[in-house]
Length: 146
Image (cartoon, rainbow, N blue to C red; front, side, top):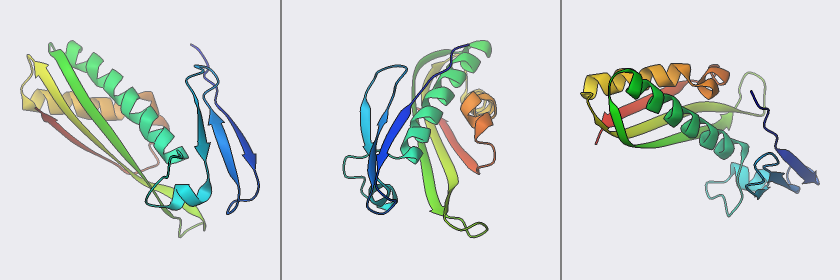
């Protein structure tokens, strides 16, 4: 299996510094990062580790769910997956930590009822490689058919 690489070039300190994250393997782009924008409600055109984790998690989950729907005898027409990754204070160690991940999926699926779809979604939540890597973080899932 392949290894994927990203690279970050950072200049300055935490509060006054900034950097660029490069998606090196895919060459899909380079994105600005900074701690003040990471900690703000409005990202101001910069990404963050949490947004990148949300992207990784939502895409991994969608792939896994698509596979599990087919295994259950369904036909996926479309899946709309979001992942909200929250940064918050870490009372135990100081600083910050990822405090939760809320996933939501709405699917258009033939051949599965709501219960079958929710079962497949729960299995995808447990089984996608990114979920497995993030299992120390509390995750919620809201799954429904369109």
